[in-house]
Length: 109
Length: 309
Ligand SMILES: Cc1cc2nc3c(=O)[nH]c(=O)nc-3n(C[C@H](O)[C@H](O)[C@H](O)COP(=O)(O)OP(=O)(O)OC[C@H]3O[C@@H](n4cnc5c(N)ncnc54)[C@H](O)[C@@H]3O)c2cc1C
Image (cartoon, rainbow over all chains, first blue to last red; front, top):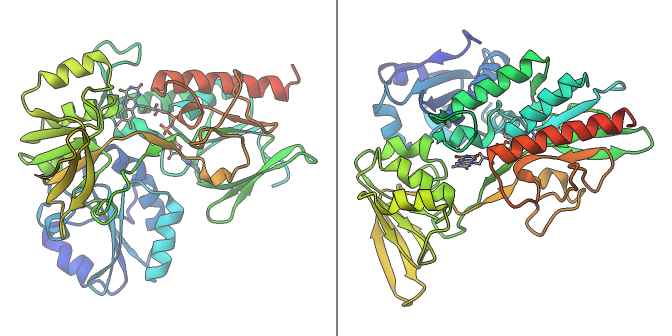
């Protein structure tokens, strides 16, 4: 299911789109070879619809964008990081349920 | 919800999906609740070599895609939802399910197919460095360790299979096992012991995982000699057994001492109307093939119960 609410962000856009974002942002670090990443993809899409205008929801492909994952020491995917005013407020590793992601988002709002 | 479905299946791994196929073909109105999306542990598996029907091995993804397509073909409704509580209401003939997020469902029967999750070692540094070099999924995280040295902890099928997978990516795999021989099936042992990139570290346990921001080394204890040592690695992959995803049941069902649900041959649990299938169940062998068998049998048992056979 394609969803326009999830943006794909690259290393080059990361600063302007995520760190400078005026609303909190959630970034889903993923790769095509990762099964659990695929498992949470629909959840991320749903959340993007639900939190439209409140949280920017983005995905970053770690194969195509090595710089940002390196900067945040990511060595496991899926990793979800919630940013607020350019700083990390929450980091979740592994394919967790929607409820857990939502409670992290609520805290960041 | 006054008129709940006939059956709710909790969990969309091989057990839940198979139960879905059988239940839909029996024309039971069935909903499968999955907290992420279907697949379960099969999605952390690179290739499956021992599930019949695929002589050239099959990827975890591909197998699950086929199972989902097959279940949907017979009308299984797969919904996103995480079950947080289960309460039988014998007076009303339903089971009340509470979902994380507040929704409730009141089906006439339930199949628990929530599978299992990896055990942790429970040593200092493990929690702090999870996602920073400590991993429970080689297929997910292996590629971050290209040409580096890593350790795999464990000696069973999963540990050995994943160590072999990692040799395709990393420079060296130390296979740390508490005994002096592997527990994995012979075929996997033969492959591992003849793989030059795998170096077994026998009779050893991890006491501590060290690193400030990323894994840097492991503190090991040799159980034979009592000697302590340090092993420098960038990653550690832990495969030391699994634990059932049954804590949300809060002692409602009879389980063994590790929390695996006890059932009879019909997959009936200690509570009327609640069945269990797959890795969450107390049984000798936890594999896709046995999960599939359990799922089929549980749906059959539900059909018998609801139709009063
Ligand atoms: C690394 C590894 C390699 C393996 N290799 C093989 C192999 O080669 N061959 C083989 O046959 N087997 C293999 N297995 C074992 C096999 O994957 C399992 O036996 C099988 O997946 C069990 O199926 P299941 O449906 O019981 O549970 P699972 O696959 O664990 O699925 C359970 C599902 O339930 C969901 N769930 C859990 N709790 C809830 C809740 N409260 N609400 C809603 N949903 C929930 C989970 O998200 C999950 O999707 C391997 C396992 C591992 C870990």
